[in-house]
Image 1 (cartoon, helix red, strand yellow):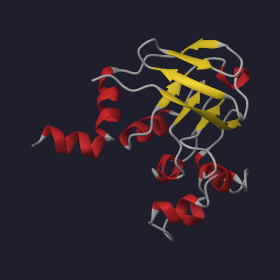
Image 2 (spheres, one colour):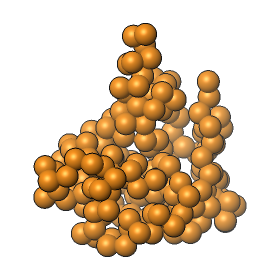
Image 3 (cartoon, helix red, strand yellow):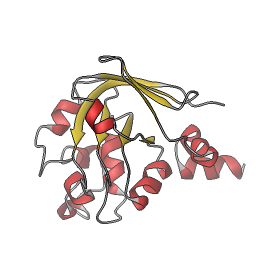
Length: 170
């Protein structure tokens, strides 16, 4: 089974080294376990309207520069992004633990050099998994993306690591 293409609008473009404490403050780590309630606090320290804006776009896409998700290893960072309805993140690079945490919860993380310079808030993008490219449908620019390893594709198809393991042990 092949991954389905993702097509939506860019909600935000984040700078290099956007860290997990900026995604979700550590002060909420133990106060709230419901991800939908926690999601309202996503990016609030650097982007106070993020949650409200994420609810106005169907399956929005986040774009980032390099080293997105650096900092602490808390799983809540990719979880709250997914809980906001984000369909995928396209970044030039990721902190490795964030990268694995994202795939473990079924959040597609696409690596694409130059994306932070070629996409703007409101642009419509399409991620084509079969051609390994990201198309900016607003500007016409096409960028190659790093192919997603087969096992990571299986995690995404299953909806994350836990659903994948349950499926394997039936």
